[in-house]
Image (tube, rainbow, N blue to C red):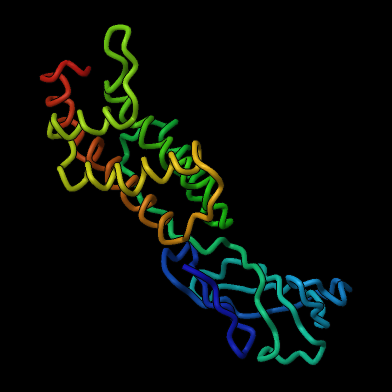
Amino acid sequence: MGSTLRETGTVSAYCPECGANSNFEHRQSIETGQRPYNFGKARDFRGVKYGLHQCTGCRRGGLSKYLADGSDNWQTSTLMDFYPFPIETHPLPQDVPEEIEKEFREAELCSAFNANRAAAALFRSALEKTLKANGYVKQGNQLRDLQSKIDEAGKDGVITEARRNRAHDDIRTLGNDVLHDDWREVTNEEVDAAHLYTQRIIEDFYDNRQEVENVLRTKGRI
């Protein structure tokens, strides 16, 4: 979910207070004096400005960083960054342990900064912390890897077969690529999938907590 600069100076972006996409009207701009700007390999002779904005719904403030040519013509301006961060946070059940929620929220924050590799690693970590907190840990002296933990949660019926596949394909494998393989770009689409299915699996464990605990006790997990 990105931010868009309109011809009027209004920025269309996700508002955390409204919980939806909103319009942030321009109120004032500040000249930084940075000219010319090294935009990639080319020299861009527009100056860098910061704009103050306000949500038309809840009146929350916003801050933009953009390139402008000095004519106050928004059509020739380019939006570089915008705060609040353009990512929609996913709700978590009330009973989620604090350390799991904090890991998940930090992953969302990394995604908001386009730190996709860090986000992928943290979503993987949030998944593994969820499984460990529910008894999917080492057996005797044998350490279980994340793959076996996911598979066992599927065998226990705590997560569905479809969710088990998503955990492997969209969360575990992506996180492993970041942690163990050569550097590669992680796309927004990959992070969005990891974000969604990590949240869904956390919900599987904590949305109907009493029923899940009954299953975990029967299986000797807790």
